[in-house]
Image (cartoon, rainbow, N blue to C red; front, side):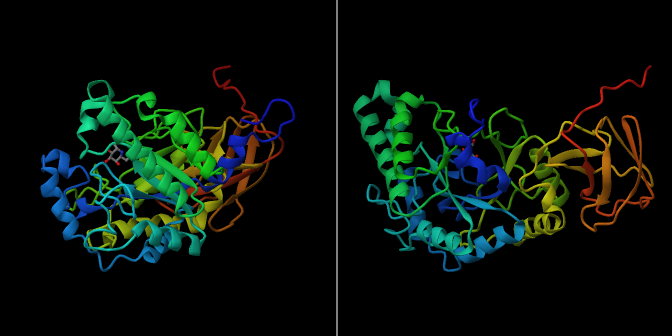
Length: 405
Ligand code: FHN
């Protein structure tokens, strides 16, 4: 990513460097759909007529909404940025849009939740992301498309561009624009080139995901961890399937699964964006909050192996995942081998080994491309992921296997 001539950081690299360092963000899907509490696609899946669905806005008055509490939870989780659904596919805006009457300011709540979210993030030094759905199920032109309904599409596209302009203009510095919902239309149909040029003119340091139909700054594998040569971020639900609140989806991922997903992302130079779906009253379900806090507890002991870390050439599938930062190799031991561990394939001289969480130094012996670490406890000190640190000499070098010789 650096420019080939003088190693200077490229413009993209400069604006995305904080994000690559951050590694972990909290996604929030919240809106009218939290009232029926059957996920964010309830309007579409249950074919609720838009006028009937719009009645929900008269009931959406979340007295318990407290953005400071959301941000506090993100901090407790160890997240370094947040991404809030400013408008999802149902068209309901959580901000004071001048091009829509279907907003949280002009209906029962009479509140600009985006403004409250931004203020809380800024107060806490939390990086601010806006999710924005290009598609809006309420517009017939979205369903017709530009070919069938060119005039209607033009009006719809102007509405979308106007809303993005509002979000980029009225709330100060925004760090991430997380588009969604471009399908099935082309970036040309959305005017994504012009749209993102406008965004960058208003927010020169913003980073933009790849879901306006253009690659922009980072890729966004969803519900899967898929490494990319470009900057990338895997986004995941905390339960099986739903982003919006859906208590009927009881299969919440365990803290172990969630931490290991974060580690797997970082071991592939990726970020992890984990979603919570607040209730209609604005509170985050306690079972979701508990998992976020569990991640935070692990990160408080092991965050050095995540923040600013990335892939290492020394993968150890028999032990778990490996991340690296500078001269430190972090072996994330998920399959505890017992009192002795063999880390294979490191050609570098190993200077020191120790447990990251406790700092306890470990006895080790290097025999060519095998490193034996001994005197370990019989059971994993941290069943979720015990991190063993290897400090190596020089640039990382992999020793090609030769065990058959
Ligand atoms: O349809 C949306 C879905 O509701 C959710 O917002 C996810 C989050 O990345 N994006 C779309 C599905 O890909």
